[in-house]
Image (cartoon, rainbow, N blue to C red; front, side, top):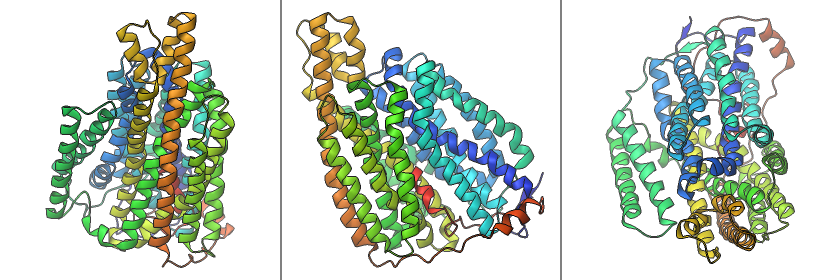
Length: 549
């Protein structure tokens, strides 16, 4: 086994490194798929497990919360025990948790399994990127490797709905979670043979109390937001206050530690602070809309998961196209103009969603999704580069970890916040037919998935009345969220122009000669060493942020 350190001499990547890259991109692809397929499976698991609307939201976003909460922690832990070791442990853990989730027999069991998946997933993304840096010291080779990793990560988002839709049309809802098992088995077999080990002897001490405080900040706060959507009560308010108090304690502790989980000094850098906040806000709004769009197509329009995936594929390809265009235009146009223009286009997409009817809405939903995702391209293409290049070189690692954390948290928070707003509108607008029992009526008010599941159990007039009312109420929630998001995105466009108007166009990147790839294929089998700085200047790096927002 070769264990690299920061003092190892640089080496040219050879055949072993390129084969190792294939092993690393599979978990990246899987993570992106796993973030999207459960949205398609929600109606099916809701019929099987009968979760409440709050439990449905927890099933969807507990994965993202735990992933965000542990990203920085796992980054520090990987430096201490070894990146490859952490990746392999996390891969095995992810496979076991996937099986538990696939065969869950209750909402509580599924939520717990998804939480375990989030913790395991937090080991995968930072470890794969760090190992790519180990293996590809040469900047040109590393740029190609990161571009391949990015393509697979974004590709998981593109093909996730299609893969999930196909599996749901042929198998039960748990089958989409079992996709992880063969991928992680391959990682566990090939990883020790192809991947280097890396430990940072100067890595900071892992402060377990900070880890606990970060979770005590995120989870109670989001729980309070979810529950308040169903009405004000003592427990949700207490949870919100507790989350804020623990957040204050967390921030104070980071200022007192020599090796904090969160480096507060980074927030004094204007460009870094602005790019990070913009990424968080964009992810929050977009994450919430994704859930509602999926449910609109399946629950309101009655499309199968397979057809829903096909309807969402054009919007996923749209963001790939605009990422590519923005990356090219960034050498000629100021990033402020590209980002503001894209965010205004996304705002137009949300305006379309605000006008969607409760029947025959597929065309408008697809158009809105294309405008939204396409408009996000410039922001996600340029945002990550801004975060990493704005930070000083000695803090680039912390800056990258925090960027990943904020992106994951933003998406998960969006599902909770905007999903809760949509649920609140649904509960206010739905009209339950007379003659239903109190339990049945309350179940129908919990969410549209429950209402649709109850329809076959009712008589003709009652079933038709409930289905129509539920679909109209849910569409009203989508309309409200769309209108709110449109206003917010116009504001974000103004902020992007104001925050980044001083930044000039980016310098044109130097292309990697084709000879380098041939040289590396026949070159050394020695594994490259780790650097403290991520790949901020490498080709394709900025596109990585697309999967975070």
